[in-house]
Amino acid sequence: MVKQLDSIPEHLRPRNSGTDEIFKNRWLEVFTRTHIVVPVTIHLIICTWVSYVALQQHSALVFFLLFGMGWLFWTFSEYWIHRYVYHVHTTNKWLLKIQHAGHGIHHQYPKDPTRLAMPPLPAIVLVIVFYALFTLTMGDYALAFLPGFLFGYVLYISLHYAEHRYKAPEFGPLNRLWKYHMLHHYKYPESKVFGVSTMLWDKVFGTMPPK
Image 1 (spheres, rainbow, N blue to C red):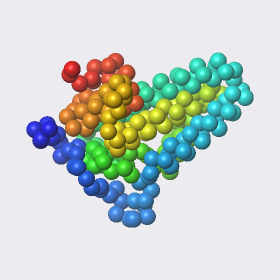
Image 2: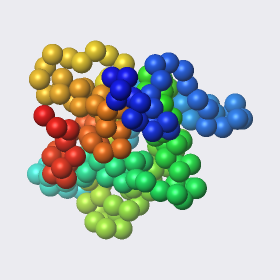
Image 3: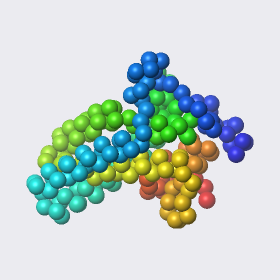
Image 4: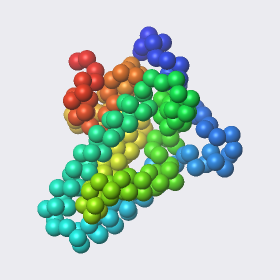
């Protein structure tokens, strides 16, 4: 393990404990942290309410089809953002700041429980942005697509929190998710295992770790 850690860049090298600040102002810093229950609860409430509204406008078949598509699209977004935003090599100062604040600190302090999910305020802003984009591209169908997307996000942050806070379960598929994510942190932070809630897109795009 030590040999592998020595090969990891300093800005991604994990520490066993501790945390770091994004803002020097303590009031701003409060908004960069959250307990996992808060975003899970907020997103499930939004997901449930929007699903109810969507079922008033669309048949159950259309709703569940679009819900599934939204969930699938989340898994692709999860992979794409992780690989091509948070781990892309860049010299752009703004993108470097985004990488550090949004993901680099998590790599440096992977056991910090307050930084295992996006805090409520920026998360809600992004929900609004994504809903606007979905509405522009698919109109009223966005009401059924958005809940699937949000459910995928809730599953992602819940699994991500569990992977860092609890021992890997014995159940095969979950055991593999746990171990693959640890490989991303401690062996291949820049090149392998960008999926968290699923390995689907790692298999599609060839970023699975060697057997």
